[in-house]
Length: 326
Length: 270
Image (tube, rainbow over all chains, first blue to last red; front, side, top):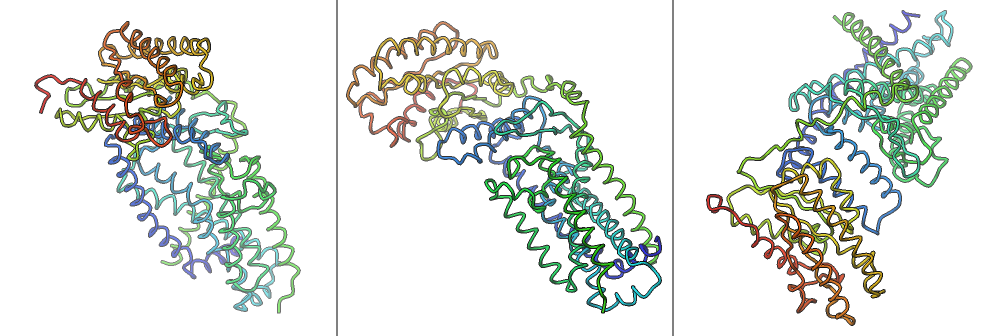
């Protein structure tokens, strides 16, 4: 089994896929770093005051003023109220949510890339794991070996898990190393709040507690890893089902982008919450953002994603062991 | 070389898989099975040392503005409000750096303001301020009191009693936080002075102003700034299209009047 996995990794390595992904991340992170830096700079200039407490207080007052406007949609009002309670909590406990530093950048980066960027990168690796063998014809050579089919597929899947882990680690390391040049490398111990949950309009704060930022980041990357695995597994399933890598990529791409669009407009279509792509933003539960659909929670999303992944695995193994290869 | 690279990547991948799995497990533990909830929430009390007066040097003039839509600047197309014009006027008079925090909220009544100034950050702003600007009462009188619809003196008197006791509490609270800063309470005007019943509404507003000024006089360093006279004639020229908030010209009048009351010692002047 080890040898089989090694063999699969060798193929991935030869195709230079992981290398390309690292290059993509290394090219994007400076871009985001610069954007973040500009944002920090302009807010400072605008207020003419570097004290974040004043800034946060100003934000709270602005939010309160927006809330008092009567022409506002209900879900937006709800979101603002949650945001308000959270900001107030930060202020009351003297916690700066925007403290610049490489770990903070990592956190923001990972929160924003969990639903699209990282799944896309994973897709690049997973899309042609099986389908390229089918379209290239090498699958016949592979299957003529005296190894059971499910073992071959399992070795491919294990290779996928390993590369997903590698991609997540690479994005963590790169975002830390590159953004630290601008923001400095400190800030791991900064306390952050988690455990926000919403029931209706109320922000439930009785489970809120503080954790240091390093733990927060570790938790978020754990979730990112899980999301990437799920997306990888589904791509893997499509890769087994379809011979064409382009078709696999196209379908996954459409699904992921549809998820990003749907999250913004499904608030009244409740059964959409069973789709895997609207459940990808797991980190939002940690940071206490409003959920796209009422009734979604971290546990719910984890279970939905898990069910999709297990389904994907079952289908891929069932199809791969049975299907005729010609 | 290539082989080495591959085994390195493999080892790294296995390691990171374990790390991220641990992270995921931690999420589950933290979010679902946390019996240690609230353990740390108490340990991290606000850092009181940091909340001390930070800039008490003579180089800056700190202004804290609290209150309702007048302080917010509703109706001014530039969004400055009277404090914006006041700041511009002051900048001409002094070389000090003016630091302004505007925490006013549209539609705020005296009850809500009393609650707002209990918040630690607002407290901090008030504590650090050299000048405190305040507008309040308009929403108590014109909306909650429904002064226009029921001009019955009984209801109005009741509303006023509530307002006055809140106002006294607000003054007291601010004085407790900041012993030396000067409070400028910008008074009420009658936006309905050109309508029917203007005699009744004007007399109500005058009474509120009189009583507020009395309450202000009971505490040291509270200046009650009248605005009633500014809007008495030509009220329509100074009101925004909602016929309630001042427009740009109206705010300029209030700003000029308030700015003229803020005095600088000789060495601070330009």
